[in-house]
Amino acid sequence: MRLDTGTILDGISTLIGGIDLGGTKIEARAYDDAMEEVSRRRIPTDTTSYQALLASIADQVSWLEDQGVTSTIGLGTPGLIHPETGRMLSANLPATGHALGADLAALTGYTIPVIKDCRAFALAEATHGAGIGYRNVIGLIIGTGVAGGHVINRTIPPDHNGQSGEFGHLPLPAHIVSELDLPILVCGCGLVGCFETLLSGPGLARLANHMTGQDQTAPDIWTTMPEVKSTWLRIAASLVGIISRTADPDVIMLGGGLGTAHGLAEELAEALDGELLAGTTPPRILPAQFGDASGAFGAAIYAQQDMLKGAT
Image 1 (tube, rainbow, N blue to C red):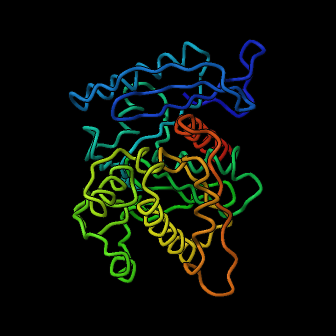
Image 2 (cartoon, helix red, strand yellow):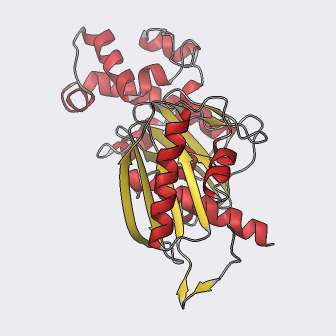
């Protein structure tokens, strides 16, 4: 069901819904027309089958409807979403090969725009968070994996296969590998030598083991192994340099477990020396504002933009 922008039901503005789909939980949040959160609900993700997954999401759609969301719901999800077919490629959900958005529409009666979760993060920050006031914005999540989103003028630009923002699967530069004596590892994506193998949370543990022979958790490494941290920062700065030479953003906002480590934005900005083209202005490096709220929030914003686009 679709309602025109500004529809009023019983004197109350129509609420907007956002759903953040993860491998273990599905979080739904309702927002008012000022994009202030009204209510939220979290349930476990049923990954026993694709039909069970659809039923879990539909349950959250039904809950949002009970809250007063009657027109606009967006869904953020991990994985790749083909921009033409809507079919997914997902490592952690039983949705590969399925057009999740179309199947949800058939099941619930709602048109539900689907966006990659890392793009939802970038969109939330660009429109309402740390990226306000910037035209060309990158959101970079460094956590269990490494990925992000690109926002220009508060919108997600179109791409060919839905894979833009897969920054973690860019290859480590040969000179960095040689200089720092880094291991070349097979990545979970099937490629070899990706940034994610050493830059993610698990990657930091691999790096520490390679450098010291010790098995430590990421928080312990961060606070007790300065040489490992310094090497990790050099790797991260190399990735930021590549992003700068390709997308040339005004600002890069950091999210994820490692990305939000205290002081990282400042330390990473300092580590950029020598990673950028001579004479260029470095992007601002800022911590994200919304944390784990960004998935549902960005999905709601994406759905709102889709509704407004359809009304013009």
